[in-house]
Image 1 (cartoon, rainbow, N blue to C red):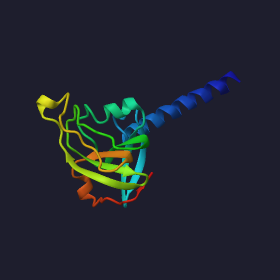
Image 2 (cartoon, rainbow, N blue to C red):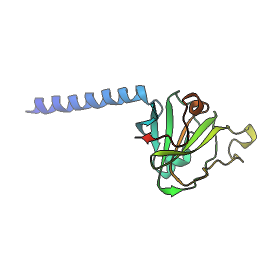
Image 3 (tube, rainbow, N blue to C red):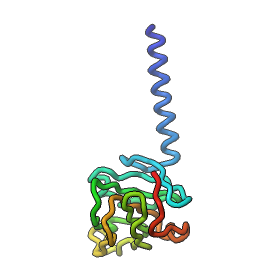
Length: 155
């Protein structure tokens, strides 16, 4: 009985370790974010989901890069105009403003802050319409993949 229980526990720990390893291959440096997939048009993105206030405040700050078909999705409780800044960002991004299941607005090439503005950027980005989700991707990804306002977003 004890042997069976020990083997079951060992198998469970082994499976958990294998799962964590597999997850790290697809979502490196994900921290506390929840990984998922998102489809816009016919393009599939691996996304991390920033649901909590702490995750949303951190965003992509302090990261050196984002993989080519990856993004960070911010999910809000209700539609609104949410201001975003590029605090402690090391690379430029495109920002997709999403209302429900459609791209409602796009910001192309939001610039990383200048060295003197690294901690407190002066530039603020926001949508023209209320949104309940915001997706950050590498600068140029939107144009390269032909993403347009009105495209349907599937989760």
